[in-house]
Length: 103
Image (tube, rainbow, N blue to C red; front, side, top):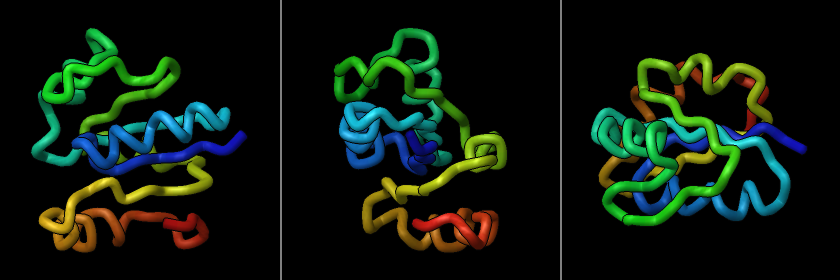
């Protein structure tokens, strides 16, 4: 079982939680600065507010300020942001990623 950290809690990032959990991986979902309400709702209800769907059991939720904790010991990082967020991902996330972790 691997530890997968997914950056971005919108439709793409949250959608990646299901196959990762279905394959037995530990999943950490990190919200971008735009995902604060999604992470808050997921922490309290286990649901993705805008999608009105239950997220898989066993997913851990992190706000962007907690990204270092979410990356600690990760075996894989998934960039779950839209093309609109790609520049932010490159500027804010790539510099803090461990060099030995695939993205």
